[in-house]
Amino acid sequence: INAEYMGEEGQLDLGSDDEDEELNPNDNVQVNNPFLEEKCAAIHALGEFGRSCPELVAPHWEQVVIALESCHNYFYENIRNQVSEAYMHLVEGLVKTFHNGSVPPYKRGLPVSQRLDPKVEEFLKKDVYVKFFYHLTNDQSIEVVCGVMECLLDLIKLLGPACIDFGLRQLADALITLLKGSAGCQVKDVEEAEDDEESDSTLFAHIADLLEGIAKVLLDAFTPFFNEIHPHLLKYVNPERELEEVTQAIGAYSSIFRWAPTAIQAYGADVFPLVLASLELADEDVSRNACYCIGIMCEYGGQLMLDEYPRIMEFLQEVTANAALAETKDNAVSAFCRMIYTAPDRVPTQQLFPALLSSLPLTGDLGEVKVTIKCLLYLTETQGELIRAHLERVIALYIDALVNKEKYKLKEKILNPTIAVMKNILNDASGKAIIENLAGKLSQEHQTKLVELLK
Image (cartoon, rainbow, N blue to C red):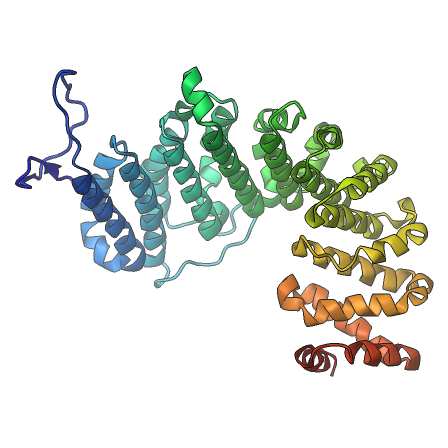
């Protein structure tokens, strides 16, 4: 890794690559790409060894760390990327050495229920995060910055809050710098800025993904961490921004509100008017994310959202009327379903239920099917007369959910109540007849699956 190419004969100098040496502009500098790719491969191998065979790397740990240290700011961006990945893999391997070759489970939220081994924390603090946070704010390559955010996200998913709680202040500062557009990779001249619009979009998508990942492991402890970041993210929701930025920003707030509901109380009043205003953009992707965000805010926002239900109903109806994509309509329908089972007294369910049934099952965003089934289960329990008036259609939707449970990725908390309701319907003669009639129209495979589930 520390080898330096010395000519066509392939001689190697095992001394360090000193990037501080001054180069004469008149010198004919040539870059040997095969050698650089060999260097990348060597760094990649070290990371993989560190993750998969940590016991073999342990006797050489100091040498490995010194080697990565010498390359973390290398001029060739692919090498910098490989160093970031190698650090991530070494952390995983180091954790495994203290837990019999496996990564221990963790509890989400703060305070941390079980800390990492002191040696792991020390490596993260003094080596890994020093490099990661430096690259986030100073590296001139968007690819490298995005690579660092991917590594951070993977570490957070793997190790939970114990791997990041001590670095939240520095991470917040780095994300604010990126959202302000003042990081090293964002300082461009006019010509570069015109060429890098796609790269900027990629960068913002990585920021949004990282914020979601942090919220998912910190839960409501994310809200105070997000306090200083919020004003800088909020400006991207403004309808005057680029469409893709608005789409991604609304998506980021949706994920944050989903995993950290206290953030709705803290920041929802700022976000909600801008989300409603996004309707004027008449963009399918923006509207889809706006509907999802509103649905999440209604489900978890409590009193803050109740007075807004009339405006929300108008918003959802307008989106549904103008949407061309199934995914957009599906998110409007799922938002309506969230409103029903969260605050049924604020929704004219009796009036709108036939239209809701005609929109089901969802065909675009299948991840929202669970929300529609949860809504039907709630109405089955609380508004029996309404359900009986549309019993055959409701049963058909329950059957569809059961026989397509893998496609819809339905979990037991939805499946088990659905099965229980169907078994209760089977105890009624008319209900049983409806089920048998609908089941007879299924494929043999689905008939067998349904019988197995309801036996």
